[in-house]
Image (cartoon, rainbow, N blue to C red):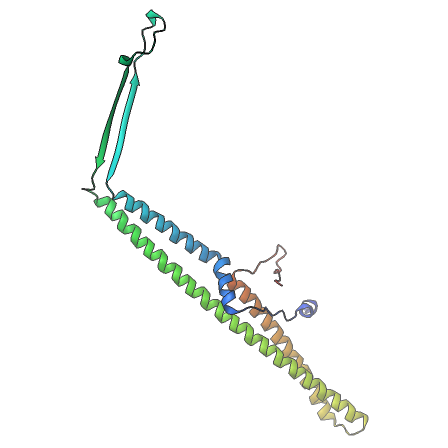
Length: 222
């Protein structure tokens, strides 16, 4: 197994400049699971309105009309009022027996309340996820900055030992320790860089804006 350094060299700190409240608003607009919950609540509200309409009294106006066929033996006579028949009536539907409709209305109200609670819980979960990932990303950024300082200090120590070696005053053990400290500091910086990249991708994912290309790579947001 041979590790490829190319991918690691391409990693850089891309820290988003965004307030957590703005990130939450983006998540609520972009997360498909939250949008599905909103659609389900809207659908349940429509069903409640339909069920409520079914409980109301109904008044229908009914009209019928007919035209008798003319006597063709007399050619084409002019229209005669006697050939026209029509009637009209009103149909009143009083809500006297509405057990089935009441049960449907009650079920619609229960479904609406359930959809509302589910949406509220989804919103709370999304806010919590975004806040947690935002804090984790900020902590990863600080860890990387600390590791950068550690590399700089370790590099200065190596340079100091090199100067002492030129003056003939360096100790072999101190030189080895300085080199080991520099390697260790660079390793910690690399780990901090990878941790920040993972935290950033998790932040995008919790916001619902992490897009994966066909080649399996993610699309970096500027």
